Image 1 (cartoon, helix red, strand yellow):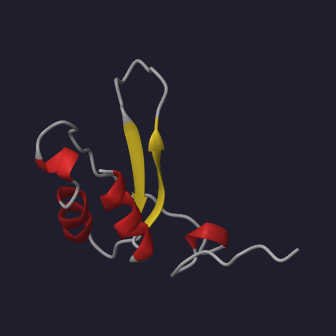
Image 2 (tube, rainbow, N blue to C red):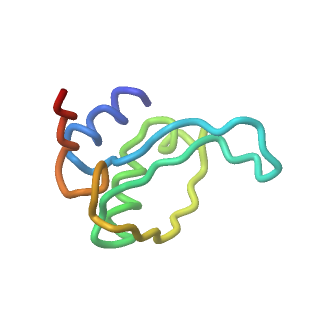
Length: 81
């Protein structure tokens, strides 16, 4: 699972990933992916072994933001001192 997260980040597809604290929705975590289509997002999340094994379930919801900071295409730029 963690290796897959790193791979998706290195491929510039994963922008945010992390667990949630306990919540009423029983959500375990979130991925924000940079994808052109829902089908691409489905393919990427199925590459995660925990999702493929049925340990985690998935809800895919479109989300939009301005292409700034970590949400620009490609890897985030390192902050300059």
